[in-house]
Image 1 (cartoon, rainbow, N blue to C red):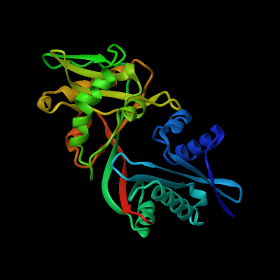
Image 2: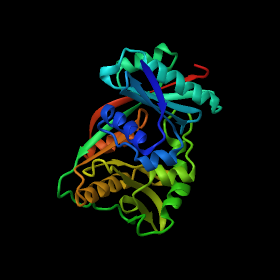
Image 3: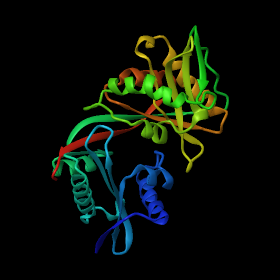
Amino acid sequence: MIELRVAETDEELELWRDVRRALLPNERAASVAELRSGGSFMLLAYRDSELAGSGSAAKSDLGGGSIFPRVLPEHRRNGIGTMLLQRLASHAEAAGYDTVGSMVEDAGALAFAQRFGFSETGRQVEQVRAVAADEPWPALPDGIEIVTAAERPGLIRQLYDELALQAFEDMPTPSKVEITPAEWESEWVTWPEATFAALAGGDIVGMAGLVQDADQPGRAENALTTVRRDWRGRGVARALKETTIAWASRHGIHEIYTWTQTGNENMRAVNERLGYVTRDISISVRRELPL
């Protein structure tokens, strides 16, 4: 028998995290506190009383909704994915969304999505870099100073207003990324001492940083790396990335990973020159509602 349950208690949300970590072991999983503050609709799937999968539905950064049905390998091909998908899509429709998107990680998952009318809209490339214990600090471009958000109260909001909004406009996504200031501070830039801003004459011209992984303190994800349009091509992005690597090496981090959209080959090339290698590809899919 298959049963879907809404995940509400801390214990249930930890089980939801267990499924995500089992299926996406190379990615950071949001904490229970972050899940609660994010406002997602969370499901657990059971097959004959055994945990078999999970799902979530929420607002998408690209407009509309996002849904993520996930089933553990040993429980697949039993209708669990279909039940999760239908319940999540119904929730998204009831919430007023007219489209939903998702991410799939392999050919089987893509085929499943296509059977339900989802179409591919883009791809994300994951790159990973091993961090040595003695990574050097970079030589900064002339006129550039790098500071952390921990040193400058109010800098995180400045980064949103002066850089992030511009970066969202430039991202090669099917529709414009829409992030509120609250989402920026609670989801995108959460580690002030590892959030770096490049200044030129006191003006913010670039940023980079890391997102902490509490489950695996030895790894971190790159936060948004971006440079003001009129400062691009001057080595600022590279210097910022090298700063995050050097900082990570002195704080017990041995692996950094990042995701870039297809169409953002310039940043991917910067990463490759810094020693990042491709590890995975995730496929974006979307369709109209109702399912």
